[in-house]
Length: 335
Image (cartoon, rainbow, N blue to C red; front, side, top):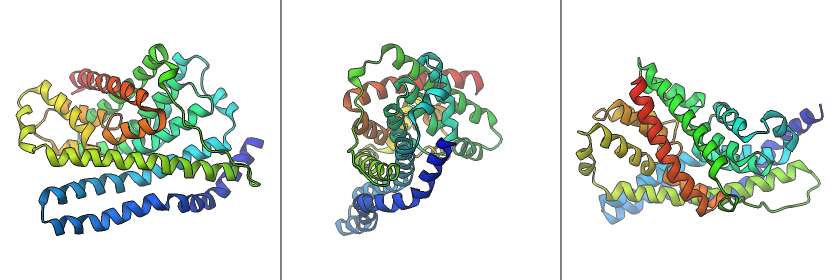
């Protein structure tokens, strides 16, 4: 009952806390709004189609990612402020080998994108969850939640095997990466951000506000950096160069796996992009949908800001390889 009262207090202060956090997060939202409004105007003033295209992609990625980033930071702050550490010890097995698949399967309950999963995983680690389990949740949450699976079924009507393939390949990738981290990961590679502490008469409510402000502003800057990198790639690489790979089924898998990294399409929308790539094989399109929610430029930037560059480079590169292999095997089996 005490835990329920704590959660109830969290829900009552949630709206007020989000408003308070909006004061601190207003700067980032103002930048996004000004960029989305003034960006096209600047592009028109310069009369250069590449600049206009860059602003369009940059604004789309940033505006698309901010709501889910806010969702993730709200969940992260709530976990840190209101959920006792003993709750996680009861829910997850003590053995990392068993905790990893449980945490990976738990990703189905968070209807968000990759922007939301990073701060949540960081909060889980701070609350005592084994890093291997938290990382499995980080990878699975944006890939196997109900919103993503329903969107995939709509994008590929009459093809339930594509939905099943995405679910299986994504879950396998998340669990394998969790196990790999449990076996080979080193503590010095992983840097957990330290939130500022503040004494507040409201107790958990004050901690919730501080955590939300800190996480949203901290991660938001890296979201903008990742969006800028993706927009630059879209503007520099000609589409004609990509058509050279469509004739080879295996090269097309690698190509779409790379495109998933640089295009930074939200996991709720990437199925529709994959469905539009009709010139590529089903396995290649599956790879696009499996890799994207786990490894893209904005996600690498968010991981760098949250866990450190040493972690992000190692974890993202290995995740990409595992996701591609998993997609190829599952695609050969189901598609």
